Image (tube, rainbow, N blue to C red; front, side, top):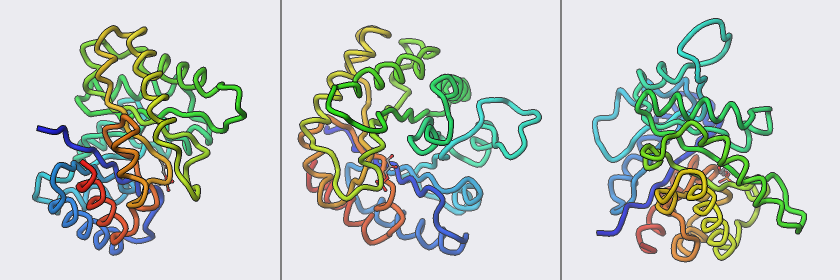
Amino acid sequence: MVAKTIVVANWKMNPGSFREAKKLFDAEKKAAEKARGVSVIVAPPAIFLRELSQSYRGSKVAFAVQNAHFGAGGAYTGEISLAQTKDARARYVIVGHAERRAEGETDDDTRKKVAAALALKMTPILCVGESSRTGGGEQFNVVREQLRVGLADVAASALGRVLIVYEPLWTIGAKTTMNPREMHQMAIFMRKCVVDSHGEGGRSLKILYGGSVDEKNAGAMLRDGDVRGFLVGRASVNALEFGKLLEAIERAQ
Ligand code: 13P
């Protein structure tokens, strides 16, 4: 049997009200239930999480949070702990998204969050990727370092419980996505880095791609990019586009 394609719907700071969030979720849930061979993880704004997850009875959609604090509790004004998100039925947590790194999240923060998520039996979705390309190949150094630190506290035996997303900042919110051949090259490099740090288990690293994924480009990326799925921004906050994206993925598998 072909492994399922994983689609993470990262709603970012959208939509503006719970009513709209519920409508969007109901439509995406339907699309997810129709799509065979696709596993959907919805990452709504944390404030909508509990109400959405409590109203959902199915098993086709899982929930993620877009970020959480690694601490168990304490004086962290404005933060939400991983344990609190788990209590609201999040099974996954996005760690080190490019937009959060741009706001100051460090590699060391990602290391702590990945380890804390695993300790709670949640699945971290660790994002890596360079912010720009100048042609000198420095993206490989950036990605190697982000993987090295982010996975530093992950035992080799726990590697299979981590998802990695390659999402170069310059393809996020852009007009076009990256070339699948280049993604393939990066996937080979990423596996090699993790084989070097964690041993042979690095070969089966689950790599997703993120950055301007839509119904038009997803098929080619799935066929030629050596990826197991996608982290989707804009196309995940439009129910119609999301439905078409899942159909395109289903056709490409
Ligand atoms: P867009 O799909 O809107 O480009 O956002 C993608 C993203 O944030 C990947 O992680």
